[in-house]
Length: 87
Image 1 (cartoon, one colour):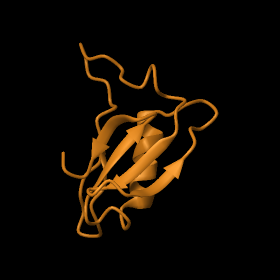
Image 2: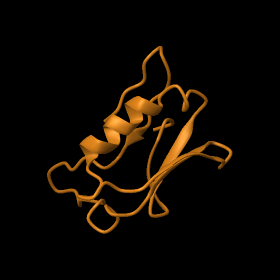
Image 3: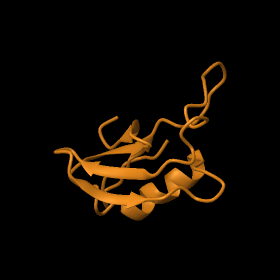
């Protein structure tokens, strides 16, 4: 999971797969990523990579956006909630 730092809040994606847990990316990996502030205003949108979203790719995006998510944000892929700065 992503962590928070003094430089800004990072989105914690719940897309990592632990033993006995389903892979929630299976059905939505090719959908667009949308990051919204806590009021629901979109602050970033990005199409899926050609190979689809992976947990690692989402963590990379979280790192790039940490200055823009300082006040809190939620993440969605294909409209499904996949993470937040508030987790």
